[in-house]
Every structure is written in C-alpha cells, then in structure tokens.
Length: 295
Image 1 (spheres, rainbow, N blue to C red):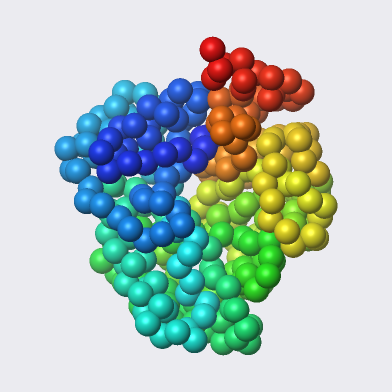
Image 2 (cartoon, rainbow, N blue to C red; image 1 turned 45 degrees about the vertical axis):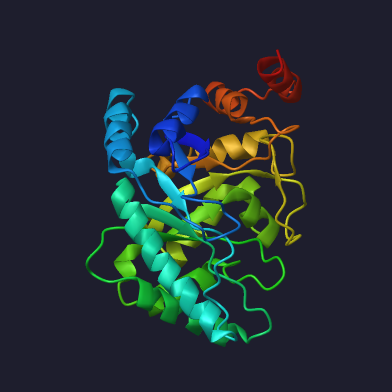
C-alpha cells in the first residue's frame, strides 16, 4: 500500500517538514506544491535540506520515487489568446521541472488546461505544443496529466482527450496520467464498476501510463461535471468503492494521494489513512479529528 496525502511545503523547512507531516498521518508517501498553488512565486531550494530529507525518507521507508509534485493550477497550456501568458506558462513549467530535479522528485501532476472559448482542437494543439516546448531528452521527470471533471472549459475529462494529447507529444515516454477519483466520477465514469473503467483506460491509453492516483470522494453525483471533493466515504462514490479502487491489484505499485477537504481547518488524513489501512469506515471521522487536534 503506497498511500499519502497532500502536505505543506515551505522554503524554510523544505522536504524535511513535508516528510514529517506525512509520517504524522501514518503515510509512506506524499504530494506537495513547491509554492502556493494559486500563484507562481517560488523560492530557492536548499540542497542541504533536500539531502537531509532523503536520508530521513530512507530511514522511514518512504521511496522518493513515490513522492509527487503538483504544478499550480493557474498555469494554462490550453489557451494561447494571450500569447505572453501562454509563453509564461511554458517557461514556468520548465523551471518547475528543474525544481523537481533539485528535489529528486520524478513526477509532476499537471491539469491539462482550459480552452476558455477556443475550439477543442485548438486547445489540444496548444497543450501539445506547450508540452513539446517543455519536455526534452535531458530530464527524467514525467508530467502526469490529471483526468478532469469537465467543469467549465476543462480539457482532459475523457481518456480519449488525454490520449490525443499524449499522441502529439514528441517525448511521449515522459507523459503519464494521474487518475482522480472525484474527477472521474464527476466526468461520468462509473466507479462502482472500476474494473470496467480500468479496462477502458487500458484499451485507450495503457495501464503502464498511470503515474499516480488522487483518492477523493465526491460531493456530487456521477456525470455532474462539478469537481467538489469530499472526505472518504462521505460522498457519492462511497467507501467500499474507493477501497476497491485503492486495493486493486493492477494498481498495487501506484502511489495513492488523498486530496480530501479539511474539517474546520483541520487535516483529516491521519484518520482517513487509518480507515483505508483497516478497510473500515469511520462514521465518527469529524469527531475524531476535533478530539485529536483540539486539546
């Protein structure tokens, strides 16, 4: 079981604090933004902190190959109406890959983008051109395109759309996919028949392209195209369906990352990971969170 959650990252404490937060949740992997997700401001990376974190990871059986970086969601490769913003997104993501290299992390999750009024074909072309401008043969960092809910003008709501992007990228071996359970549900995929969903993905893209999975319940019904995450077992996907996904043998070696909402500003991950490991739903989740964090 490779299970973790989104954790915080600061330039002052770097990966060391991120790792300690993850270990406090009972996790053996984690995901970070290398800065605030809503902007592109980034600080310098302290190589001594990186080295210290890698040593601590080895001591705690956390494989750096399972740790994930998430690109900020405000960069948009799908729309080039404002050429300066489009070119900035490409430059920024190239720099973000360099940051991943300095951290020793080899997977970065990226939202494909929003067409914002452009045609679908033009948006796909923009994403492909952007990725071809970002990726080269000099790095081992992979970009994991995230499956999206289809909210607004999002690209990537179907496996076919993701496949179309992958097929256009020159260094296609550096493109993988991040499955998001909430997004899949909201996009219209029936996760109560997850083996069928996996079979469809395998036919269109290939299971070897799954780089990580975001584990989230959903506040909304299937095919709603809303994208509102819910705590594990408290949404429309349901605990049993999520457990079946997490423990699917075909995904055994794939890192699973929780992105579920905080409760009253408090992280739920310690208790959700306990639920997942024990395969037992906790209907007192919110009470347990309050008891643990509010002394």
